[in-house]
Structure formats: structure tokens, C-alpha cells
Length: 475
Image (tube, rainbow, N blue to C red; front, side):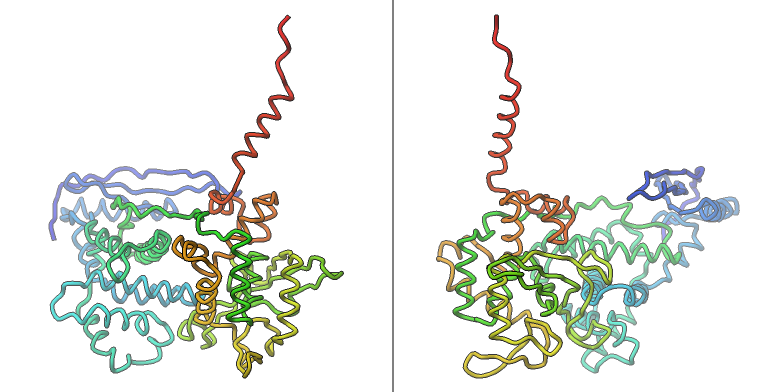
């Protein structure tokens, strides 16, 4: 530990922030000090906490205590910090978050913390393989029910024991180079190639949350990321219009589904004609479908939740499916989406030929001879079955050139095709956002490249406006 007696402690800085979402203005209090010419700081929500921390620094300075040049803390506080263990802290963070987040997010937290832990211990002598460490961390260490139930399985015991015997001090994460190393590792997939920008952003948020929790518990004096200027990959949020299926391509794909996996035609049709997310279609009940009042008319889908396939290890029920609220909605919120005549015909045909499951869900696992399938256990259609059906449909319904161009690469592409189609048909962005379960800003940002002809239409409107106010003829 490198120390210095060259310490300057400054007055508390009050920072005011504008109110967010109509709330009250926020005020924070930042303690600032310098050790051996290097600046340090820590922010507190109340002035009393800031004054208490500043008083501790001043007391140590007056008593002639050396300050650590890495953490900026007085030597006794820095030694206390260095005794904290990242491995145990990461476990505490995962278990603290477990009751408050969805099953899919639990799994995401475990995967991120596993990646961080492996990055911190890589290169240590005698370490188990990265693959074994990841498996132990994800399937046991950061899975609260399994970790609290008892010792690890025999095949993971050696990896868990090694991690316990070779801890990484939390104090090491006060070093900017260490934080940068972890962030760089989160930006890569397991094969060493670059991860998607959205994935990197999600993992960075989990890592930042774990560090913030350490600050909250007093294990770190400040958030280490504040001292690291690391640029995450830019998020490619806009949908590429070159891969969005046009109406003719979409109909070809649905026809191919009917010919290869007929029990899935209405599933994909619901995504295309109503813009539903896959998990929303999986949760669709017979009672959610309001039939048209007259033949060939429009119906409605009244959505009340989603069925997310995440794995039995991450749900509270021990089932592989988690039934939860609609995305960005409260527990009992609903969303109404119009069902155009073609979709109603598909749903009516599907319900007649493939009866709903025992709980009323329309798209469940089935079995039976001769292509006439009956509901089996009533569980939603698996992701593997959905993607297999889509792969077959693309191979049959698209031309070689369209396949090479990547048209509709995944089932979710049908939702993109639906929403961009609504926008191009002239439906207001506000109404499309309501039907889709998006905010208007997010909707327009994602589908900006899919507004065919929007620029030309805007130019015509400007031209018409100018002509309405033509300049008077010269005398």
C-alpha cells in the first residue's frame, strides 16, 4: 500500500439537480479531498452524512495518519476496505436482488457476476478452467435457493473451494485499471468476439449496481467507475429496414409455416398482424380474444401478462416458465391490441383445429398422430420448437437472395414488420406506441429507418404549405 501525508480536504460541495418526471428537485453533498496531488470524492444524499465522513478524514489528518494513494482513504480505513472480499460481496448482492427482480433478470445478474469474477481471478496459479468456474458461479454460487440449500454438487465443489480460498479484495476494485479490465471483459462474448451493445450495457449496469451496493454498505468510499472513462459500444437500437419483411414476404413466410408446422401458423400470425412480443403470444388465452361482431370484421386482443421461458432454476415456482406482468406495466395492467380480419380468421381456425390447453392458453405443447395435436401438459410452446419452425419456414418461404440478405432472421422480426407497417400506413405514432407497449420516443427511435416514404411525404406537405401562402405578383 502506497501512502502519503500530502493531504488536502476541501469544503462540502452542494449539487442541485432538476426534478425528474415531475418530482422534487434533488440535492446531493460531495466531499472532496486530494492525496499526493490526486483528486478523490464521495457523494452523500444528506449533508449530515457528508459532514460525518469529512470529519473522519480531518481527524485522521490531524492525528498524522498516512493516506492510501489508491483509495484516497486514511490507512486504517483503507486496510479495513482491503479486507472486504469481492466473492462474498457478489454473493450478498445477488441474494439481495433475488426477491425483487424477475427470473430472467436473476439469471442475467448471475451471468454478469460470474463474468466479473472470472475476469478478476484469471491468470492465478492453480485456478480451475474458466468454463468450470462459470458453471459453478452461475448454477450454484449466484443462485440463491441452491446456494442456501447446502454444499455444492461434487463436480463443482473444487471450483467453489478454490474461489473461497483465493479471494479478490474489494479494495482492488478501487484501482481504475482493475475496473477497466472487468469492463473490457464484459464487452466480449465467450469466443472472444464483440458482444452486442445492448448486452454490454445490461452487464455494465449489473456490475455498476454491485459496486454501488458496496458503497452503500461502506465497503468502498466512492463508486470506482466514476474514475474510469470507459466508452461502451454504441447501441444499434434502430431496426434495419433491409431485414424487415414486407407484406408479400410476410405472407409467404406464414404460408410456409402452414405447410411445415401448421400448429404454429396462428402463433406467428399473431406476432405479424398484432405486433405482439413472443412472450405475450405465449400467454394469450382464449378469453383474451374478443371475436369480431360480424364476419370479416375486426376483433381485439386484451393482453394481461407474459409467459417467459427462463429455466426452473430461476423461478420461485420451480417451473421453467415465469408468468409475469406485461413489459413496462404494473402487475394488473392490461393492453388492448386490435386484431385485423386476417388474424381473426387465423385464430378462429387455430382454436377449431387445435383446442386450447387446460388453462385456456392457445399456444401450448402438443402431441398426437397424423398432425392432429392435442394439448399435452399445457405448457407454452418451447423456444426450441418456435425457432425450429421459423427456420423451416424461412428455408421454404424465402428466396436464396432473401436468405442471404437476412430477411426476417428471427420470429421477433414479425413484430418489427407489424409496427413499421402500422407507421407506414399512417397510424399515429401515439396509437402505435399504445398498441405496441412502447413509449412514443422509443418507438420512433427504433423504427426511424423503417418509415418508407416519410421524407417524400414531408416534402410534399411543406410544398403545399408554401403554395398556400404564395408571394403577391409584382406591380
